[in-house]
Image (cartoon, rainbow over all chains, first blue to last red):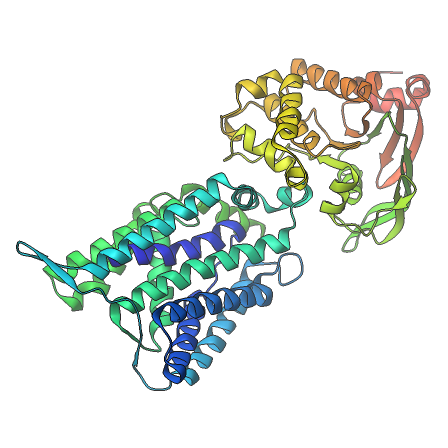
Length: 287
Length: 239
């Protein structure tokens, strides 16, 4: 069930990577900070679940736009891959530090959706897990519709194939970059809310955790491919659940990175990522 | 009318354009000839707003357009058909065309849009046939037609074309030049960058030769054909 949420985070990475060919290392931290702000506000004012959810989303979008302006702004900011990545690393530290200040102790209560559970025969199923899964899948479907059917999605895909061409055809590339990050923030915010709801708690490690899961899921599925990101997320979720069930919690991360290691050896671009990987190689050659 | 005055551009220490001045009249095909590395593409990209020149001016219908962004230039009616076509290979032919019309989409009714795209399909029937195919699956000539169609979708008055014959079979090249002729008949102005001097001679009204970033010769098609030096250098004739 967590797989769908992994997929959402991976999508956030893939969206940015697909369009800009750059990795946003501060993504996980942006989700941590947005969640921390929402938790903080809840501790002061005691908000409803819905308000919690909305504040998380809003801050996630704002922080991601901030990251875009600081590290990835097209034609205005640092142009290369390396400067952007290093800048996003710095922002990662900055956001993490802010979040640590907001939720100073290790663990805080996160107010999310709780729906109880049902028993079908011998199976014991948490309804909120099902609900999370349904929401995450719907979000992905919605994203797919936006990307494939809307004018905005069309332009995003055009820019992801060749930003320069989209630029001279008249696309306002800088506002497109902001939109991509805002959308990534929205997806990530939703994923963070679902995951934190499932855990009912948040720790300062959440940002790092998101970055790792998202990156691993994206690399599994195929670098920069949106469908690959979904696939990677679902595989990662299933794999973790399976290992947890069969081998126990201590093997979970081991299995995750083991599988990633294998995939990277067998198919370096990820499962669906042949093309994008070529692009990176091309870019690296030019650099 | 497009008027370029004393345009200078450098890539770092390398001077690509030195005091280039030229004029492209409305309703005509103006051709820039020159060998590789003469600065032809640089010149075209400067006009399209992709590169910012260090000095000089570019005027379009009397207005200085040098500081305008590419999207503002597209709105003014200047569209670029880039070198190597640069279509979107992972998008369908139809989607490629829609991206070309992007700036106009909000102002267009659905029926207008259909009218525009049907106009393109009428001009390039092969694109209609391939409408739902991915751009990358098209042949070179079809891709060139798509690139031209995509530029036309923005409703331009002035078309900048960068080596449309590059890498195409002779028969297809004839077709492309025929299309350029038709575009001119429809009232479009074309600024054409070419290496294929023989073919360009047949369709262009006026020529500029660019050599190492400088205009070395200019004249009408007749002047050019009668100039012994040019015949030798660009038309491959032995004197």
